[in-house]
Image (cartoon, rainbow, N blue to C red; front, side):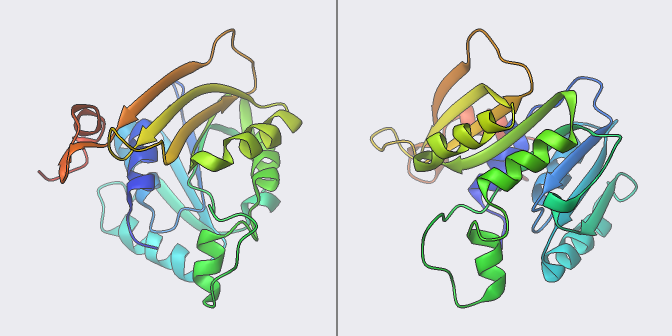
Length: 217
């Protein structure tokens, strides 16, 4: 899977505790989000995991070509079977986004795009187990899947803390949501709605400010 808007948004938007030392990127793919988190949190060690061998290999190649080689580790592993007693300060994931739909004929694209090996339920179970008590889970999801994601989170004791609804243009409905979960509930969820482009081909001021440290121009 190539670099896309979802991963770019997640890598630029996701939070981590101020003193974060360990960050986990589940389903790292090309390693984009892991690399962005390494750039944003210079004191943290980043672990990127992917169940697909080719994806893990590509992510490792991208890490080797980056300035963050000493702080990013890429592993081919099933996140739902990980057992890390030390825990993570933050977990980020751009999960499979086609649920209950026809799968692709290519196995790799099926793994990357469909919730076959990583459902929202199994993702939340893994996140709840691997997060520290004050840890933060950040996801980018299709707008239509919000209720399913919140239900899966609530089942394992994770609470919605922050949500950003993303419109492609002002006249369209939100296509994707950026969501943040924690182990402690909040009195009021931090809610915002943003637009990617007010003019075709030109990033909105919000999108520009969010991602300006990651684009060459």
